[in-house]
Image 1 (cartoon, helix red, strand yellow):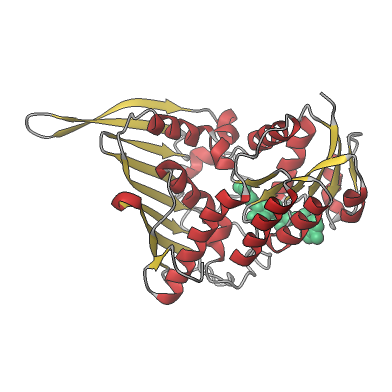
Image 2: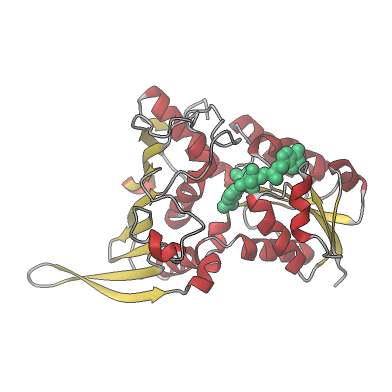
Length: 361
Ligand SMILES: NC(=O)c1ccc[n+]([C@@H]2O[C@H](COP(=O)([O-])OP(=O)(O)OC[C@H]3O[C@@H](n4cnc5c(N)ncnc54)[C@H](O)[C@@H]3O)[C@@H](O)[C@H]2O)c1
């Protein structure tokens, strides 16, 4: 198969993973990196397969077939639009844009150009959640009726960054929690009907937006998804620690767990304990018996593959494009999650339940 050139736009924290994955792809010959910060490129100094370029040079270069957009969110629409209009396939980081209108423009663009476009919801490629989905699809826990998600972390966005400076009250719902609301859609295999969300007074003084969100979502058939997100409680990580990070975070206030309850059993995913478990419910003469019937763990070397598989997502997405296959998360699908995120923000602002038919969505 013929190799092609690719580009990564924005080589910050996430862009670094996109660059490493693109360099590891068997389909990619040369990789260009676009970033206004010259320091970023130094990371790969000496790699002959990588060089810096301007965005305009990428657009004009016909050998560049695949572009990953990994810049701050307010640039996603413009960069994705220009790349797709120049005939490139695009992998765009979530969220597609800063507003639902921007996201709608990307959906229209995908239809109009017919180009390959995938939105970066890499948890679909993460083993922990793939196993949960396989167990659900195999009917092992019956009909999924209730999904509880608990996410407690430390403040890690820093002072005076594009994240902490963002003034939209619900910024973190789209930026950080979209992954976890998206997985509720993935596990229920449905779009939401209505949502009610509240945020307590914030703790992080320099955040221009809320730093906690409690989001309760109704899915078809009376099914319910709950997401509890609190920042700050997890102990701050310092690089000088000798203790292994996840092992420490498993008991320092961090939590990232799903409890997926079905009519015949349940599943628990637990990032900080590196574990996925399954329960089976049986009707006994005196009670509804619940038994843990399966437990799988993973090693620290498998962390990325199990719960944050951007690298694996990128290899799979580049492979899909190279083989002329369809995107596995197009803009219309990603919009379902974005709509839920914005509905939750509206609910917090209005203090009311928001229906998915709300004309503002
Ligand atoms: N999928 C995930 O799990 C995940 C995780 C983190 C971040 N993200 C997303 O990835 C994107 C980048 O986040 P990050 O954490 O890497 O941010 P970051 O601030 O670490 O990096 C952003 C980079 O973009 C560069 N940049 C700024 N303006 C640019 C321009 N005009 N053209 C090209 N590059 C430009 C900056 O110099 C910086 O290097 C965001 O959209 C974020 O939501 C996704």
